[in-house]
Length: 251
Picture 1: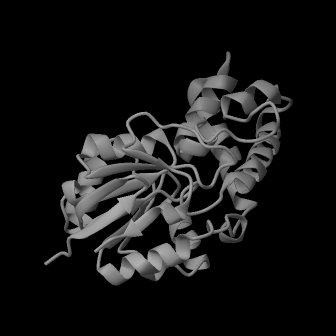
Picture 2: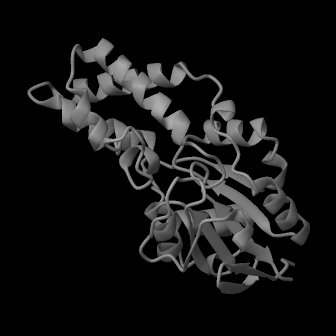
């Protein structure tokens, strides 16, 4: 029998919670610095594949800001690697054959990823996450990470920071079920965790996380900005939080 836990998230209280689905980058880990390094590496590898390219508009299309930062709502921060590959191929294709362009972009992205065999050290755990996970685990709530990153990277992140034992599921991008698809939440909750979406909170820093919750019938969609320099709004979120401490176990 699952516990029915009452959680306070900011000024909202959610009763009968049995599971929480966390995003990874920008939610559990501070990923901006690593993603900026990955941008530079991808650009270098694309030049190896295609020769000189116009980098400035490509960087903008990925969500880089004019001041060299990364938009938390942009493609690089929110999209899966496949999303980024297709968008980059569309930018570079021009008169090139489409399939050949996609293959070259994919090869460049793989070379860029190979330059970072260990990502855990480059994505620090957000302050306050570890004690939050420890508190949640004592309640018996099922915990999962569902990320747009690859599953092997999700596992490596959790193991590096020694938080993997807190989670019942570590899951990366599913090609046939992109993150906003409500069927993904149903699969995670019903098939993997053994709970219903209506007893599940989804916590993340992007619209993909909020829409996953809304489309999947979750108990709550919790938007967080605590990993980013400035707060922002996510349409549809039940509540926006800028501190990990704003999540409190009541029962």
